[in-house]
Image 1: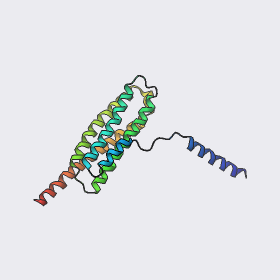
Image 2: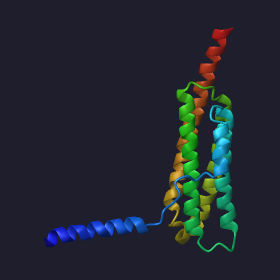
Image 3: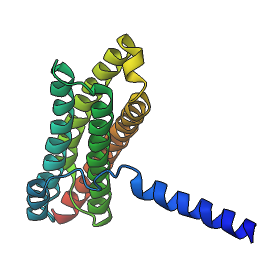
Image 4: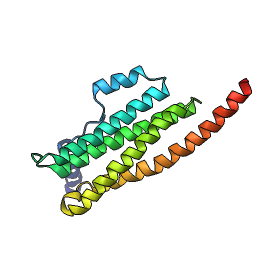
Length: 178
């Protein structure tokens, strides 16, 4: 009987801990951004440009917040903003995969994405350099920052390979139509 009570007590504590844990919103996109994306559901170039714009906005917000002397919880906000950037960037990549599966022409879209990748790499590395100078503060977001850098680095390489493949595919398709 006491063992059953102990198990019930542990279950109750786990449930309470789960309910009281802070919840993050599941979608980092605003309703206006979602509406813009909905309007470009079948247009890879426009859709990818929007995702690059949204990811860029997240990194610009990080820069602005970090330079604001009034911000008191800078490490925590940096962490959350980097999570949002990474979520948007992951969505960008998921959408690219979907368009690739549909055999869409992604050449123009990929050029915009690769330009964004280069910009994102520079901004993330600057944040990493800043983190090195404030080690104590950076402890709270170091892991998510390294994940973001790793994700952008590996995806940049993948995006360049995909662009080369797309150039080859569409070159042959044009020859076939001629």
